[in-house]
Length: 501
Image (cartoon, rainbow, N blue to C red):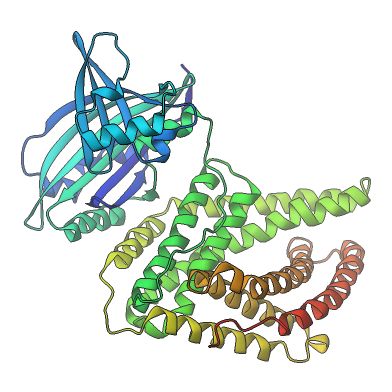
């Protein structure tokens, strides 16, 4: 059976039943896990062992999975055991040898009725098989009793296999679990893993590889305090980052690179939008790490656009131009170096420790002393809007660097409007957001042209002939862009300031 991915290693820390953080490790680090500090220092007894070998079933349209129910059958001797779980609720029942799942035998009446209603007479069929060996070690983490469950196994479907190595920390105090995560992240590179083995099994069965993920709407409540709103917004941004990190690692290409950069910008925008209620001493390290990631993925995205869009346009128009052919080769080499730097960043100790610490900080209880989120959001939107309108005065005659300032201000206003959209409604915010997006897109096209000029000079600093060839096109695009942006700006000025009143 061919292996879809090399065996990977993951660390899972159970914070509580509703909040789980999983971290990936290299397979090499996983093999030495028990011999390295701090794990070695925490071991406090002999391990227990068990094995899970089960086939998971569902309808063709995955009705059970979509409702949060997992249906599996474990083989053992002359009998088979059917296990049905939904969150913290679980029920098992014995089946005859060779028998398939039977939902009518679910002991929990409510769970039985729910499962039968979802299936509604449709047949259930095998989706994937899981084979996992689990060893649970007792620990003492700074005096707090805990357990570490080490799981090694694989899920298989469609003649492909996804191997994994997981470590789960269970502690009486979830702070101790995060202490364990931080200590391990400081000792070896880790990365957040959002998917459990069931999710990976379904993905394997239906060919759903890791894909680039767009930003999702944030669910908010205006009665929340501001710190709780910040945590919700930032977790939303982190989820987008993690999804695109998966896609990037799996070779997701230009769109994964673009959405990774977007996720970093959104997370920075979250810190900026809520800066007035965030303690500077608590956020300084997070801001520095985000700036570092931005400096890694910003250039990668710039080279990606230059190679795959700008130069592609030139080569299509002038397919036999030797200078463009050489320039393309050099630009792709520069993109390759930026790609290596990005991969190294995502597998670094700094990146893993940043993720663990930020997720831990966002899990902490938000203080009630901050104002209500609805009031704060209205003020934040007004502030961003004033800065943008002030930056855009006299737009027609502004220098390129000033146009860049407008673009940044528009981006911050747009992210803030998207963050708080749930408080005002999609219909209310639609016209304002559409105007902001169009301005940002128009200025972005001009910025791409200006960025391309800088990149050409970076790899061919003394090549006047090639620079002259490209300058005319870049200049024409910037001039045309100014006209377009001026018209878009007038539409933005008429957009309603929906947060007033």
